[in-house]
Image (cartoon, rainbow, N blue to C red):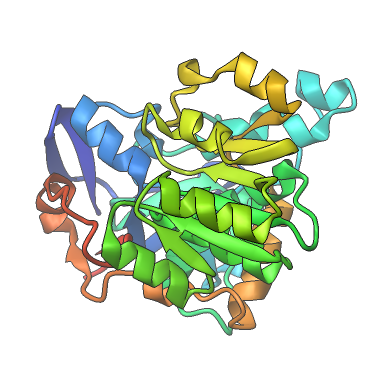
Length: 345
């Protein structure tokens, strides 16, 4: 097998390794594709990730081996990296809060006891078999790399308290932002507005169902919201971009009693103005990760072609040996946001 390993800021090696063997509770997966996410680019710049297994976590492949304590009927099953059900044993689970299961969070960031020693930029990996979600027959293997980002977006929608008929603003048209906007439209939003400086991404957002798109939090956006909300503002604002001014800008768009949600691990919430929240009696919420039911929901939508993910994928795959060059290419705003690494031969 071969796998990528960070060795410093903007530096990695593609290393050979022995074929992995499944320990009790594990599965060995031959990886077909792995998407490059925002956290991967952050790890590339920093020279380290939250865990070795976190560097390349949007992967999909096929089970080639299961531990001896598991039935082998699942060998050959196409799967995607996801999370398992709540463990029932950690402190949050023991206190009746399985939605905040510590083991699930550990699986998301690759810190669980059965995690691999490297991420999904590899030909093979091992994982806790409980966190592998089957890929439905109607979903293309390449499209399946967006299962995890779509689940993150779905979790943010659920965390927001979004309701039928809401007016939604999404700041950022990266992968998570585009999927959040698309899911809000599918979920019955009265209107969805995307905000990004990149014109190509704004066009893509509208192609995927956004009613309007603006280059920033500007007078045009404010006027549009005033016209469509009787001057109240958006019911929900999702901040899906890592920019210091994004949360402050979002606070100026939300209606009194509305909700603003910071999505993902990169938001700089030190710029949050409590005074602005108080004036509107607005709620500020954060959304990190996803749950297994988020995965199931987005896979249902993907399989029914209601959640269109293929337009978010760059049309040409990157080979594993080209990973460093792909991570160095920071000018991704002119096309689809998701770079896909084909790890298999």
